[in-house]
Image (cartoon, rainbow, N blue to C red; front, side, top):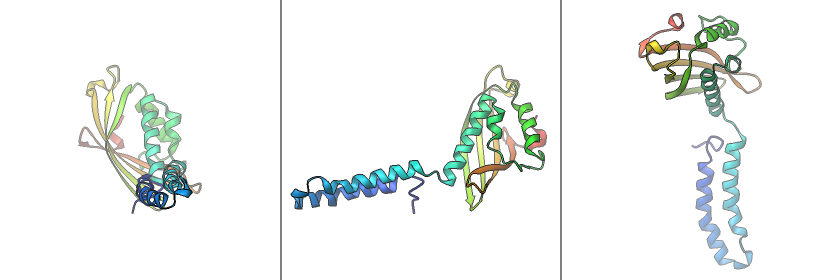
Length: 189
């Protein structure tokens, strides 16, 4: 069943269907005026309002991914690090501080024009989530990585956890391939 917090379409569809009985009631009871049409209008407003007011787990995780993408393009390491848990550990980077240093090293002079998501697969289980994503990284000509070409394909795997506050953060990351060649953090410099 469709989640009314995830998308407004269920309640908007019900509102469209409710127009028919509201119009019939309005025809049968003309003294009621336009009051019967208020029900479909309220259903539509509720659908849009719930979608806007409540950010679901999926929407939170996608917002984190978009924030990370923007931070990478802007080479904004502090913004990027806001998305990671304080107890971050991916095996190669044993702490958030080590990841921060690595991100500064990798992103300095990267000069990324844009990052396009080719595929994002999200699996959520209560307070844990896994994201597998394939991206196309478009580089500016002045990028220090331009020798590899103006387009690099990067596949990543993220593991997220839900904090006690109800917000999500990234607990582990891994680079699974670059230009369709299997790799890991040890080869990323």
